[in-house]
Length: 262
Image (tube, rainbow, N blue to C red; front, top):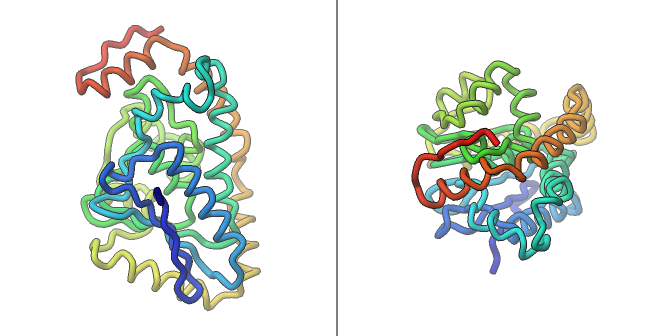
């Protein structure tokens, strides 16, 4: 099944999350297809921008928790002891996205949560429709945002705001996210694509090599690699805890978690 669509018009390359019946929830197959789309964009000559959006009523609800609980199918029965390797696999995809010299613009609507927000944070520019809910709810599952979310959010909004959002697992709306600097523009949903194309056209007026180098310099000012290593280390500890199992089960059963702190 094609879970990620791609299309090109002129110098713009679109990557579309295409699992609307599951709220574009990200499972391993979708993430793998997304990675292939990013690599396709990297190989395509003459592009000036990549737009990333979600099909249907929302951008993405984040990771498919059911897929998270079936990691054994891909990584073996003792997958929780291999969290460093698993985290590396997931981080590698969004690092590849971030390191495209091509400017990337995320178009957000409805919901953009967890891994979906981590994906958006790896883009250069974020546009959001009014009322779009953004958040990193991982601590409510007993884990942390480990696919660059903790590191990139801190780079974007500073430690105090990042701590508030991650500690609470709270969802905020696009208007507040714009005030915090997480979102560049809040645009009516029907105008998201037009606004993204307008920005891409303005970027295309600049020299492509200069834009690519400017992106490298700006991104190079933060020690993303060290942050990703720390995320992976922390997550490898948390996935072996009773609290993670409780968090995942309570989420699936839609009940409050009973944390034990162990």
